[in-house]
Length: 231
Image 1 (cartoon, rainbow, N blue to C red):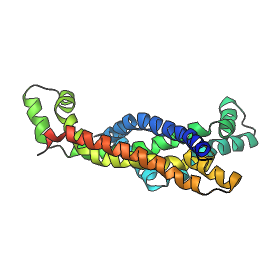
Image 2: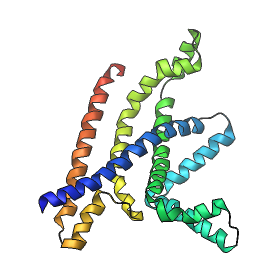
Image 3: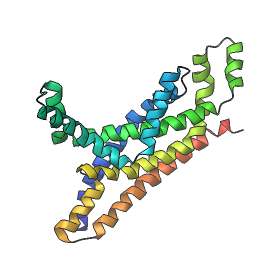
Image 4: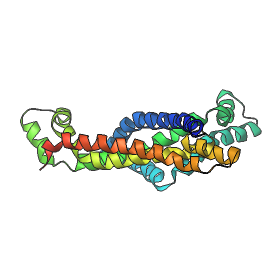
């Protein structure tokens, strides 16, 4: 029984890792773009991005999952009821039928890119303007100063808060079950219904602890690698 439970949980944890990896892959660069938008000198872009970040950070991820998964289908059904049928309307109406995993990725990427953007922004703005000015005096463009002088210092400063958000992401993947996406918590709960066993649900915690422990070690080593920027 223990081996059967472990196999089932490993299958669910595989989906958890898939959600984690795709979210990280897409949210990290998107977060950087959003941070540039929130620091833009063009006020309409700046306030539009800041408002978007405020809304996403101020509402629960669970609510965002529900809205992204059910919202398009409800809009499509409403449009069909008004006899406004076309390809886009029909596609929206069928969204909630087959795109659960896509909805999870979209919701997670939007949510975490907003959190990452604020971490990026804080790191970039913490670098003194004197470094930009010194680079320009040496004949470097602002882009060259950013990538050759500033970027690694920003990375050093954002690693601790970024590692905290990434570890939180691992645990938040359990919210995917809200729209019936199979992951490790879902796998553990299934044994309660089928066999009346509670311990598999607690067993899922071991998977999170081991993976987050590994991430903690990795980020600790990254911080040590970047210690030459201390002071």
